[in-house]
Amino acid sequence: MKTSWKVKLVAAISAVTMLFCGCQIELSRTCISHIDRDTNGKCDNCGTKMTAVRYNVDKISIKTKPIKDYYAIGEKLDITGGVLSVTYNDGTEPAEFAFDSEGVTVKEPDMSIVGIKTVAVKYGGKQAFYDIEVGLAKYTVSFELGYDGGEQIQSQTVTVNEHAEKPENPQRDGYDFGGWFTDDKFEKEFDFGLTAIMKDTIIYAQWFRKFKVTYDMNFTDGEDYVTDSVDGKIADYTPAEREGHKFAGWFYDQACDNQVDYDEQLTGDITVYAKWVSESAAFYTVTFDYNYSGCPESDVVEVENSGTVKRPRSPKRANVTDAGHQAQDFIFDGWYTDKDYKTAYNFKTPVTSNITLYAKWTGTYIFEAEYVSLTDENGLPLVGAGVSGNPSGTGMIIKTPADNKVGASGKGWVSYLYRPGLSISFVINSDSDVDDVKFVLRASCESKAYAIDPEKNEGATPSGTLYSKYTISLNGTPVNYKTVEFTAAQLRELESGERMPFSDFILIEGISLKKGMNTFTFITANEHGMGGTQPGTAPVIDCIKLTTSAELDWEPLLENLGGKEN
Image (tube, rainbow, N blue to C red; front, side, top):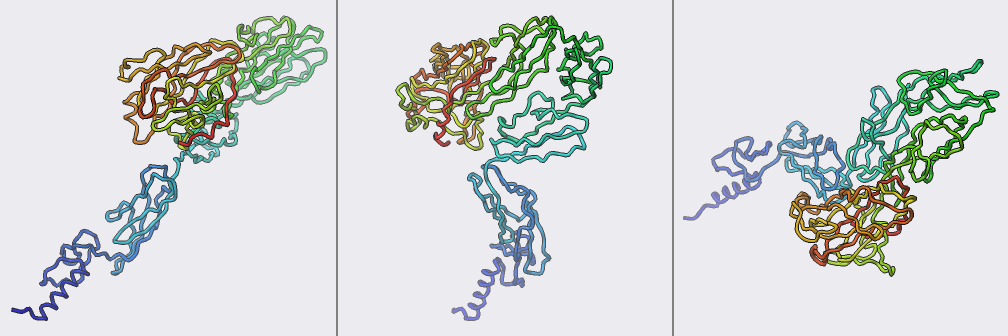
C-alpha cells in the first residue's frame, strides 16, 4: 500500500520541527516551541527530553571582571568577583550571574607562557571575553609602623627576585626612627639593596622614644644645653670652649666620677655634667679608627694625662651590595690596640701617650661562582660535560632565571663540572692572617642525587646516596670538609621541570687564611658518571661564603656574564 503524500508531508514537518526545536516528541504532543531556559536538558513547557539544548539567551557581557587580573606563570585562574550580565529574547527580565554560578563556564587559558591572555566565559550558548596578564610572580611588600594613628606607608608590588624601594624615613612625634627590620623583634635590619623579594614581605619600623638630655656645663655662669636624645641614647655633644680649661667628657654625676655610657638606652629625661681640667695639664689623643675600606673619618678624643677614655657608642657597618663584591651581616666586636686584633683595649687603662684604637668587625663575604675564571692555565676555555654536549668557558654559566625559584645568591651559577679533573678556583685576598673563618658552600644538583666527600668514593650514605670523592683545597692543601648530600627523596619532591633549590653547606669552621692571596679550588675527583656524556659527579656551585674578622676582597670577572641563559 502506498503512503499518501499528506502523510509524507506531516512526517516531514514533524522532522523539521524536531530538528529546529531540538526535541524528542511524540506526534500526539501539542507543545510546538520547546525551550530549556534552565539548561537542565528538558523543555520548560512540557518536560520533554531535548537532544540539544535550546537557549533563550540573547546576549551576555562582562559586568565586573574578577578581582585578580595578574598571574604568575603556572598559577591557576581565580574567577572570584566576576559577574555576567545576561539579556533574553523571550521577555525574561535581564539577570546577573557570578562566574561560579550553575551554567556558567570559564575556560582557563594557557597559564604557562608570559603574555596577555583572553579568558572565555560561556552561558546560555553565548560567549563573552576578558583579558588577564600572565608574567613573573609579584609580591606585596608592606611597611608596618608598629603604632596606630600614623600616616601609613603605601605598600609596594615587587616582581619576584627584584628589590623593594626604600621609602622616606617615617616621622613620629616624640620618637626617633631606628630603621627597617625583617622582624618585629628588631633582630636583623632589612637591607633594601641586598634582599631580593621572594614572597609577600612585611618590613617593620623601629622607634626610639625621645628624652630630654640636659648638658650641665658644671661651672658658675656656664649655660646649660638642652636637647633630645638620639635613638634613645645620649649624644656626645661638644660644649663651647671655657677659658683656661679643656673639656674632659660627660659624667652622670656632678663630681665627675661616673662617665657617661653612650650605648646605654635611656628610660627617662636625664642631666649629665661636664668635666673640666686646666688647659695647662698634659693631654693625649685617642684616635678611633673604624678600620675598613670606605669607613667614616676617624674620631679623635683628647684625654688628660693618666685619665681614661670613655668607650664611644658602638658603630654600625653597612652591607656591601656592589656586583661581585657582596658582604653582609657585619658585627662590631670591640676596639683593639692593633690591626691584627691581638689585644683588646681595656678602657680602664690610664692614657699616657697618643694611641690609635681599631674597630674589629666580623662579616660574611660572598664570592659568586659566575665571576671566577673559566679558563685553564694556558688561557683556553674549560670544557665542561653536559647530558648531550660539552659547554665550555662562560657557556658553563647558567644565568639566574627571573623568578629565581632556586634561590641563587647572584646573577648565575656554574654547572657542567662533571668531568674528572675539571676544577674552578676562587682567588681571594685577605688583609691579615686569621684562623676564625667559617667556610660555606652554596650548592645544588641537577637531576641525580649525590654525596660528595673529601675521601669516600664508594659505599652509600644512610639515605642510600653513593659517595663520590670531590676535592676542595685551600692553597693546595685538601680541606677535610663535611659531606655534602642531595638525596633521591629530595629530587622526588620536585615538580616536573623544577630545579633543586640551592642550599648552604657549612664545610668547615675555624679554617685559616694567610695574609695576601688565598686560593680555594674545587676539583672533580671521581668517575661516577651522572648519565649522558657526564663521566663524573660534581656539585652545581652558586657561591662560597666566608665569615671572618679579616677584610676580604677579590677581582671578579664581571665580563663573564654573557653566559648561557637558563
